[in-house]
Image 1 (spheres, helix red, strand yellow):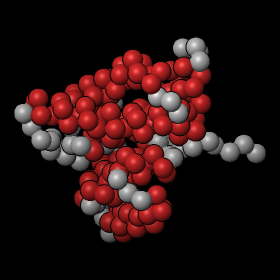
Image 2 (cartoon, rainbow, N blue to C red; image 1 turned 135 degrees about the vertical axis):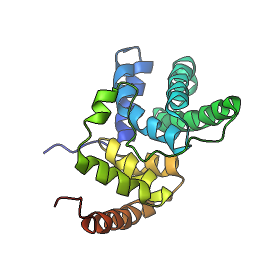
Image 3 (spheres, rainbow, N blue to C red; image 1 turned 45 degrees about the vertical axis):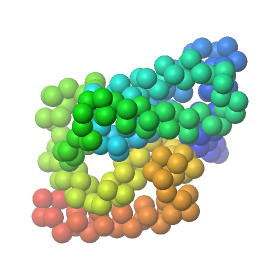
Length: 189
């Protein structure tokens, strides 16, 4: 039986291989960490365009600064901090603090209007109730939902939460969501 390595360990391995000369491993690193970075930018309430720009800038800066990161285990935290700072900078330049939350799921720019139109009624009900949760719950559930194997240390750093509170908070948030869904007649069990 194989166990899934946490995101941080997988990212550190890919980054170390990239720095060691295996340029293809950057592609793996991007695939592993971008969902967390996407959430990080959007959790700052940045519109999609600013989030995309902040993430792209973080990746470019990583390529430029790869040799200055002495411990590959810190690459995820480095990227998260870079995305937050770049998002804040871009929001200031854009003259706004944040974008209103639409309640729709976080989607990448490759999602077409047709894809959004095909969201089932069930998905729309789910996302409506997710959007009604407190911000802390929304942020945590989105990170956990979109990361293949979330690394609690990196999730904690991204959300500014103690590592030990992630599991209990997730449980409480899921219980709130379950209660809301079960009381909604549009939700099919």
